[in-house]
Length: 485
Image 1 (spheres, helix red, strand yellow):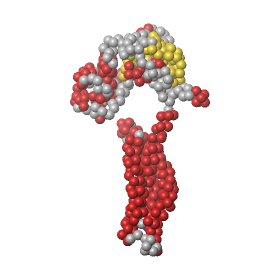
Image 2 (cartoon, one colour):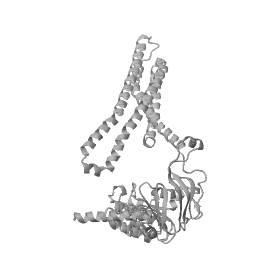
Image 3 (tube, rainbow, N blue to C red):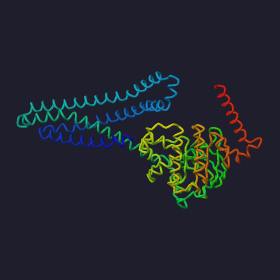
Image 4 (cartoon, one colour):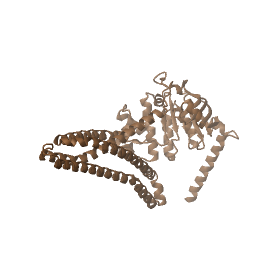
């Protein structure tokens, strides 16, 4: 995209400029010395083969350049994300050595590119030198009546010497233009070969503007995967699809709070993603208030549901833009939401709503509170009151926060989304022990469903075993802290 946005317009203008100037220069040289026109046809043939060879070589060098820079960029991103670990293990010197090695490797194609550019200049200079010697030879050997005047001949030689640099400029601009157009071709091929999630039949609108109004969710024999659906003839030759959800049957009453738990990789987050149509439902159906989600436009579906992720990302822009991307709410509403989650004093101290969000240091807890404030504003954007129905998904919102922040988040969620259907993925089981329904998952299947208090009374209940392990872990951590004191 950077080639298309930045280099393609410049290369197009430079190519047009170089082509026009070279044509004008050739006309001027030909008008000054008539017999120079005999060199135009051989020059065109030489330039054709020259640019063809140079273009192929330059294109390959540029591809090697992109391939050599990819490990270096990956190393930069890994360094930024792992700075605390590098400093903790004192790996700075080894990491610097690896950075220098990757930087050296990334510059090898650039050096080769400069080499072939100098080769191009040398070949063009040699070609112009041959033409200049030929013009001087013809001018001195032919009769005075067939040659041009001394002034015209001198003008032709001067312009001929300038033509070398112009031809080099033209070929380089043409090469940049070809490379940029190649990026357009790759994007076109990607758009044509990549399946779209907007398959036929997904362009219906919800029954009314306030859908979902009750929030009744029903999973019926749902099997889902992360693979993208392809054509039938391609699917027959491909490997079997790996299912992430297997035969899910679950009915969530409207206005209830459902907690989903299980070990890592059991399918908890995949169940939430299915609600937002971010997985491929291979069989079965998922309905909200009786509307099959596969019949809706995915963009419309996602705009009607509210999600609070585990680690909210702050995009480039101000705090105001991150809280209200559509700019539908006044600043007073934004400040009220931040005050509701007790985050406004910290943001006000860092510049207020006009501060750059991606440059403002936020802790994990503050990021989670920021995501909660954005969810409150999203509810207001949808035109819902605090007691109105709807669906809100919570993906381990207390996984990276302390106990005080966790209690604050849970209190605000219970108060502000009262009457909503809440589906929570739990990292700490104590956060869902007061839920109306708890769902235990394992290997993409539902292994247990019921009320938390009732499941704790069952001897062989999986939920009871998980709660017992968490209690033992908490007691062990408490004893370790007491021992340290």
